[in-house]
Image (cartoon, rainbow, N blue to C red; front, side, top):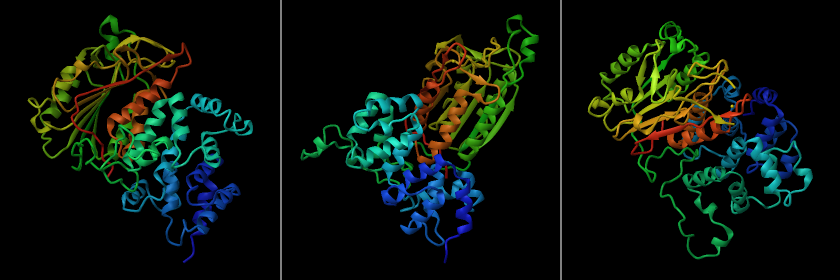
Length: 480
């Protein structure tokens, strides 16, 4: 049986130069380096993979895995007759993942590194690599590849990479370290000096969990127990989406400058998309007054959640410290909304995670460093003022998580065309990381990192989200 050349050629025609380099990097453990250096097109790469037994007649699983890793889901559907869901099922099956864990984590490093961090890598490697390998056009993939070629990086040699990450951004190394531990590859973390010792290095953590072959950390028997998330649907995702504040402007004089929240529908669509994929039943309510917000939230309190595992509520509105505005300009305390779902008030959710993501102004102070529209409605620019939700906005009992768009008293930012920094980053990270089995707090940390690095061109303002929680277990949103 011959390989489907027509489909391979069609895929090859759709890939650009950067994607080809990514595929070559991901294939380095399966194709000799010298042969990869001679690859000039995706077609050349596919031929090399075929020669090395990675593309066989009737079996394009490795190609599907490669396209999945570089995010070309469209090609899975249009040319390979597959889908994201099918590939994820394949990767979870024993022996389904063909990419080594370290290769996968190094590729994630390439995707995570910012332009400023890339420049720092080049500066720190100036004595190790020739200038010709550290030009303006040099990418992080180029650096990792050159380090491997020169013996500065490998599965038994991560010391230099660790040292570089510690100097540039320790979170980059933490992700690799956490990933290797969860993949069951913790031995790679032992340094050359430690390998000379008879025992493991002091404080070296060994996971007793067998790694998921796909690299997805979905095994709930890890060091910390995970919440049960197997019901279908998993629960309700309630979206309260306030856009039109004409009623507020017509009311109290203090709200005459409260703007409509242009761009909020982009956020709502992103939330609907990602939580539908995570097996939640999504219900959206638009342009609610303060009383409408209260009534809607309480209507979900009275529902029977006995056969559900979780409840999610996303609120998109204007606000100020500790409160949310209805479209009539009236206030609703955040704590009033979260307290509705305590064990005493909503027994069918007792012991289950209650998650609130709130994109609303909680103040009017600015982090120096971002233009755009505010959710206080006072600015003409498009910066969304969302402040951090204080810890006292959630009840003093277990199983609550409150994701806030920014620190208390500060603003956050919204683009009329692209939505808010926080909600867009949240949805992107949920969609990327949930299939890999990452828990929600880890994902929110990554959201913090991404949003905190953004700046708005006018006035160089910045934003810093912050979660508050009383979770007792790991919260992992399911994909399957």
